[in-house]
Image 1: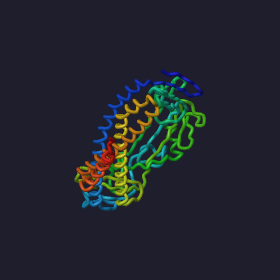
Image 2: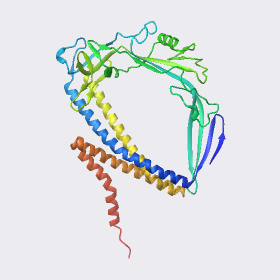
Image 3: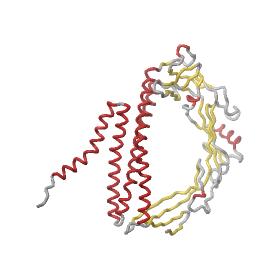
Image 4: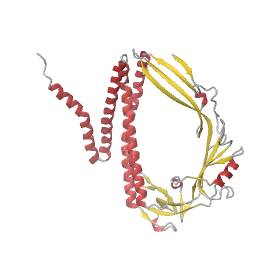
Length: 392
């Protein structure tokens, strides 16, 4: 059941849900919880294998890399992993020089549309008897956004209609031919060079005149189809950025005068590129740090997915207890603690099992720690039960 209240440019909907309906929803959520729980195991296991493979590939690359001059290709280094620094160059022009005097490695156009945005805020209170009352407020404001908001899905679409397409498409272009000194860059190396900068003011005005059908007003890093200080729904603004032909440092395999990914013995590839003068050691350190960050992010993500899945599986217990709201809150807190503890133990065990498979000397102690963490509550419970003296 729902009641509606309107105040200003917002819309509030009040809904109630009975205890029986909540039980049905919680039981359905058990299936989703079980799926999430099962998905977490292969994700955690795969992540450890990925991390080890990447670390081994980087270690192999560190041992093999040599630093060379970028000015000339030395035939003796054919097939080797080389590190070099030099100035980017290209014979290609992404736009005519009269539009943008400075040559670019890449050029990107981003289009934002002025449109309505719906924000949703919900508060839920438990009722005596196990039901709930929810208040959802839908508020509307005008924003610049690079993605289109589908107003047909708004809770209150009347008066908040948005454009259904961008007047001008986003785009990104890159040169096909680029080099550093005597070395030609292949696509995988070019993809790593992404030092995006705003185009100069003169180029912004020229690009806007070329691309926009409306008379453009330039302000800051944007060109506007209408008045920048008085935008209307459907107006759009366009920004341009480019990757300049700057100095770049690369670690890659030398192959017939080109720089390409270096294949390692475990099937991985090593290829790196950064703007500026960057040593091989710093490039490898950045990759190693990135690998560590990604590994921990996926570990935490796997743990969260597992804990959420367990929580969904146990949720019917707290919903059953919501006949008395305080009891439901206590059961909800208890199931949350259980879900977190179980997910932590099982995540550690899964990670340890993966490390036993990939690196036994690290995995075995970790597995022991996970099993000990899981066994401690059981041992304490048994000891507490043994100390209780039965009454006569």
